[in-house]
Image (tube, rainbow, N blue to C red):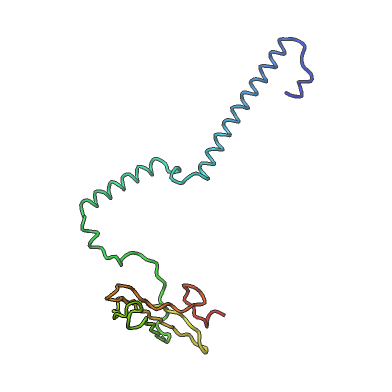
Length: 178
């Protein structure tokens, strides 16, 4: 229609008709722009909005039912938590090293007496770290045992430090890390 602006008709009726068609065209384009803006905000919200806003009503009602069911179960069996073993949680564990490999055990003790007060230490438990080592053409397993000890007098905990390793929190020893 802009190309037709140079060839405007001289009659007022044709000019009114042209103005009417241009107004209709502007109105349809404005509606299209509003529709596209609405779609764009919806897409942005879906893409970048928080995930809780993306849940539909069915999922929300299912969550409400699960919460209600859990509340009734908790009220019916209050002793159930006490009966659970705290060590039964699913914790990620590494697979044990092969049993047929020769094993060298090294015990790192913090000592018999407390470094702070000189009191006697008693054993609370121990941490065992296994490390795979390659020595003279064969593999061996180094077990580093570090007892956890507590002083009865000053109630402090003592444990020997783990020796430095080539890969922090890793299993390979220095013979495997070239």
